[in-house]
Structures are given as structure tokens and as C-alpha cells.
Length: 292
Image 1 (cartoon, rainbow, N blue to C red):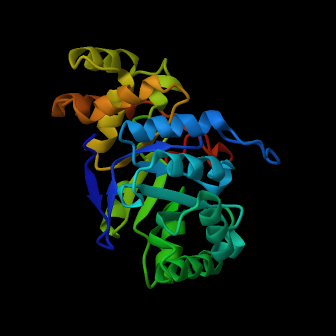
Image 2 (image 1 turned 90 degrees about the vertical axis):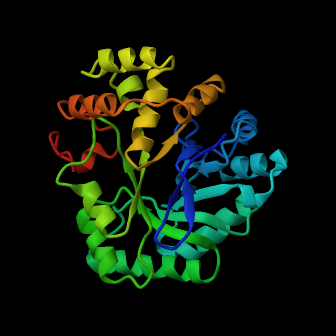
């Protein structure tokens, strides 16, 4: 599978399609049962060419991901492994060392601060970021970035950074394109954008205004609504992270790299999507009509 690469400000490159290891298999606190089904699914994804794996300490399944990587027999240098710190935010070095141990790895290709909600001040953002800079300097992560950050959180981080973040992974799809010029502002400040929950219009808000247009566009290209949405994200210059519990959908997702939706169809998805608002993640931190 030929996945396009996106250049980062630190001269590294990130594959623009990733298999997310957490959404479908999010373990509850205290659940220590080893999940062989997850191992098998990730191995299937790897076999199909999904070498970019998106992981997180929060998901509680790092041992399963590590086992899948080991059993795949794919050389480490072919992988791009993203991980995120949340519970260990107040001891980032300890957190990354524990995650690397669980996953049987020496480094992560990209390590992110999972959410901004730990910080009560600009100083807290900057203190955490200094720890991120140290783990990069020590070779535990090739690139470092953030996730779910809004503009004030990024501004606070940049104000104290000597090694600025390379990427912000956020919920992004046609029904949450982010207002106030946020994506252009991120890019102007050197941050690439990654997405999660990108298939929301097809699966979480299927009765929204894109229902008919997505179906029509998918039929025109002999593909599925999910593939069209992933294609739309990538064509917007955003890294697409997606997941599934159904191995059969992996081939469907890969179609996103082969189809060529027209510019007019891409614009239609954008403009129709902007008429509707739907947020799936962290809603308690936003007003109902807040599109930031």
C-alpha cells in the first residue's frame, strides 16, 4: 500500500493514513486482561500495509500492540509508531519509558501530549513541553507534538518552546472543520494537522446533510462513503487516523488512496459539511455551537 508522506518541521515524515489501535478497543480502568483478538487485528492491518499505528497510553493496550508488532516480523524501520501521554503527564519521562517497555520498542516515531486539560496555566503547558523536548533530545521520540490543543494551548506551548511541536492531532471531519481559521493558523506556525473520528458523517451522524452527497460520490467512484471521507481528509493535507473492529474494512479504507475524487466533489463535501455541526470528543469542554 502506497501511503503518501507529509513532511514535518523537524525534517521527519509522517504517513498520512494510520490504523488507530484505541477507539475500538478502549480498555476500562483496571482491565488487565490480555486481548488476543486485538493482537490478531493489528497483525492483519500490518499485513495489509498499515505500518503507521496510532497508539496511546490511555487506551490500555500497549502490550497487545507491542506483541502484534513483534509477531508481524516487519522490520522496525518500516513502522511509524505514534503514541500519546495522558495519565503520565506529570512524569513524561517515566511514562514514555513505561510505554516503550510495554511495547518492546526503543523509540517512538511521534510522541504527543494527549489532551490539554491537565494544565491550569501557561506555565504548566511549558513545563510539560520541556519534558517533551528532553525525551526528543535523548532519542526516545523522533518527533514530538500535541493532541486536542486549541489555539491558546498551542500559543502557551510555543511561547516557551525551543523545539516546537510538529503536529496537533484533533477531531476533524466535514462536520467539524474547526472555525476561526484554526487549521491555516496551525500551519502558519509550523504545525501539521492529524485527525481522528474522521468517519463521523458516515457512522456517528449518518442522517446529516452529507448522507445523499456522500452516497452519490461513493457510487460515482465505485467505492464507499468511508473511503471518500478518508480521501477528503488526506486531500485537505491532514493525516487520517481511522480504526475498526472489522478486518474487512481495512481494504475499504485502503481504497481511499486509489480513488480520485474531483475538486468539485471535494468542495461540495466541505461546503455541505459546514452547514452542520457535530462533535464527538470532549464535548464537556465546549458549548453546543462552538466549532473551535
